[in-house]
Amino acid sequence: MGNLPGQGDQNCPTYANWIGFTDYNSLNKEKTMLYYADMAIDAIQSSKSAWLNTFIKEETVRKPLQQFVDAQTSFTKQVTKTWYDVTGAAAKAVVEKTFNKEAK
Image 1 (tube, rainbow, N blue to C red):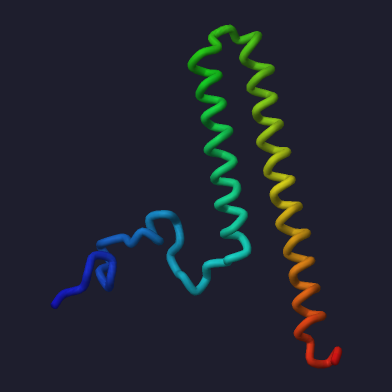
Image 2 (image 1 turned 180 degrees about the vertical axis):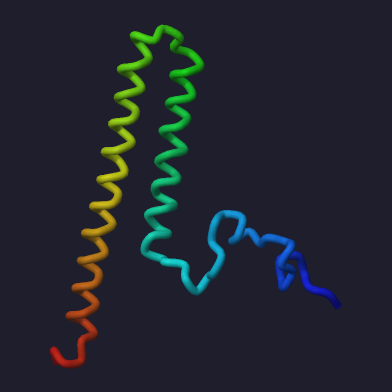
């Protein structure tokens, strides 16, 4: 029986290759979570931008609104990264204190 598509066939890209990952062993889980959070933020903010471009034709009105959407995007991504860093550091500290054999 032959390989399924994507298994051993260099001409058939797998889903992981399609989304940009070429090696599961080099996949950085830490960055992956932020990648998906940023992807969700970008999806929501892109829909806002598309709505503005579709329904607000007057440039003098649309431009400040687009700047506000861009500011929201930057702020939300920074808050997400900060949250991720803080919760990661807190979890690491708890695990080190709880499971550190030298501390007992």
